[in-house]
Image (cartoon, rainbow, N blue to C red; front, top):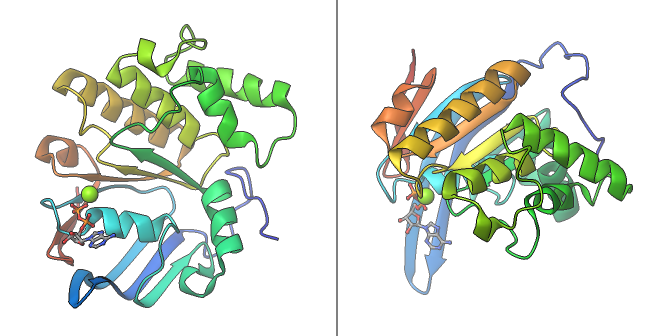
Amino acid sequence: MTEVTTQDQPPHTEAALLYQLTGVKRSYTKGSVTVEALRGIDLSINAGEMIALEGPSGSGKSTLLQLLGALEIPTSGQIRFAGRSLENENDKVLTDIRCDEIGFVFQQFNLIPTLTAEENVAIAMVPREPSRERRLARATELLTLVGLGERLGHLPSRLSGGEQQRVAIARALANTPRVVIADEPTGNLDSTNAKEIMGLLHKLHSESGVTVIIATHDEDIARQTERRIKLRDGAITADERA
Ligand SMILES: Nc1ncnc2c1ncn2[C@@H]1O[C@H](COP(=O)(O)OP(=O)(O)O)[C@@H](O)[C@H]1O
Ligand SMILES: [Mg+2]
């Protein structure tokens, strides 16, 4: 069984290094056609960083996020995450890692339409928190943190896009992840809401120290983050710190 980790654990000596990718390739084969989505990625990410992953559509951003999020394994190469080699782990271990250590935020929000905001957040805790009362209490806390304390009982259809993405961010934080991975989180929002969601991610990062990795093709959004990694045709073309 994988140990359940929280932000509160004392740091290990090498704790600063969260990810180390070495020669990571990922290709997809359909019939006789092979697409090389990632062509050999070498990358280190420290705990507590906030990173924008930039690149045009098709450059491999989502593929890289899926690998960082333990949703996929590489075709070749190594991914060390928090001391483990993801490419060698079985499905059960990867599922535990996704549940305990990684929070996902998607462009389409991916909320369950028949559940309230509070229930959408609480359901993410079902695998780890047996008490429904405690799940709902934590969901209330998290929704208050993202500014939706007054919207707990609303269905997603009664919330704006920006509010739905706030619920999704609260859900991503449900199990106190080490890293929040957001794939074009503002892609479905107007510029005002996009700014607010980015402000929220910055606030969560600076207040909790959680690592945040955001894929975007929006220059304005990337410019606000302290580290920018640029992808093109499945390779890193720039890696800059502000
Ligand atoms: N599941 C898949 N099956 C086949 N090809 C894929 C799959 N996922 C991604 N690709 C291909 O890999 C390349 C990179 O895609 P993606 O990682 O989604 O890029 P981005 O998120 O930057 O738009 C694209 O050419 C895309 O068509
Ligand atoms: Mg994508």
